[in-house]
Image 1: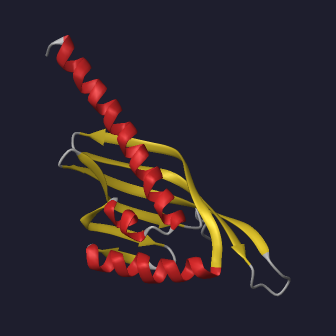
Image 2 (image 1 turned 180 degrees about the horizontal axis):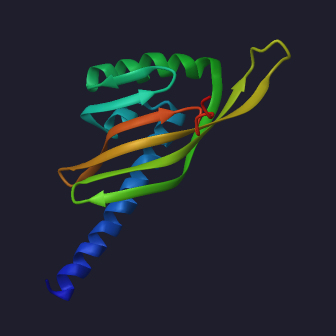
Image 3 (image 1 turned 30 degrees about the horizontal axis):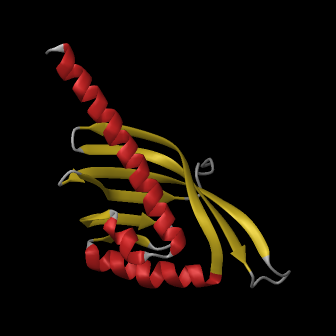
Length: 152
């Protein structure tokens, strides 16, 4: 293999990695902005989203229901936001996998003691695919609590 070919492959992996990071941050931005059609555009048509609170949903119709109805309803009660950090991603051609730490800040105005602010920590486990030159989320699972408490 020529040096140029190897260098081109390394550059492509770096570009793919940065595109995946941008995709995932964009997905979270749209969740925070409650821009559900844009959220869905980040996910493949046959993609799966598994949220701790709402379970696993696969395909465009189920995902539209998940975000536009279920997640939207939760957002009405808990005004807050999400952010992701510490991505660990492995790119293999037109597929990639990895995980992120996800933090959610929740403002709950309806508590016995008055408004409260709290943090939720979890983990996003993900699979990505490149379709027509664009990276999309194929699978994302939000796990919480993370790490899981010791058993026993």
